[in-house]
Length: 387
Image: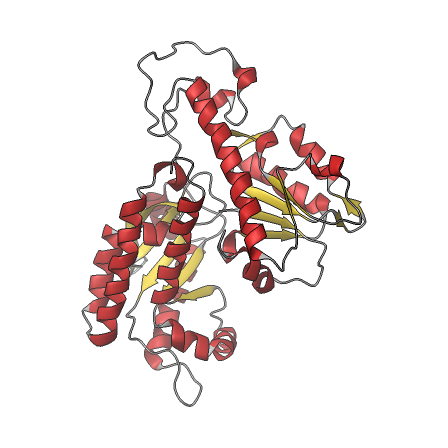
């Protein structure tokens, strides 16, 4: 999920905020602002790019301004967002309770009020769940209104050929209706919960086998597993993985990253170059240096970064071939190692990444990938209006 947090806490950092919002989004998907005008500018960029966000949560007073300004702008907006599917005025917005400065009339303008924030995670979870499900119930009503079954997205037998009651739509847009779309291309609208949870169990078994049989073949087995169970790679932001694209360079040389994950058109994320190594690959030596194979793996991803960010016309040709367009930014992930080793040496790993200019490369362990997918499955279950 994409979350916008407008905070009065000027000293807050992403790690601290993620302690509160981790059940709802990943670190890359949490957007923190300490100014209402800056948050509004971000929302305007979302509209301009037709990107997707899921909800806003805000303090009442931020930088000597008040949240009624942004909620009023939002509720009176004529903007649409997320591939022209949704009305911005319906976007869920939650208010963090401040008894000293809020009246009941003010609170009524928000979808939910969050009390005891951030000390009571249960109240936060309950408020977010209520706001999201309220939005999705309204979406389901809109789908039914235009003649689509909200659960299956198939037309009712009494298919309405012409629809003129646009004013009755609460969430969907006139654009969605007019193109006669039959698909909401979001994982929460198309997921098979049982299948996704089976993938969690299967990947956990895969990690277990890697623990007790750390053979050189496990890397190839991991490739095959991720190809066949690609929601672990894609999550909510990416539409498809490109396996082993052949990125040709001058002089008959070639780079072949394991995957490039392509974002949905509405996603705020950039294409992700995802390189797979073994679970058993150690990262740090006892003398507090990178193990040579780990350093080589980071260097390999660094080479991909040089290719993707080059202005060389040959490189641009092959990037366009696989991604169908060029992007302003790319993300780089090295998938390797165990969570326990990473946690034991986290500060050292970050320092070494800085020393070797690997800062732009995210180190993701096997257990972290599994936990990320489990969190996504939990969100899909929590916010499902058909269960």
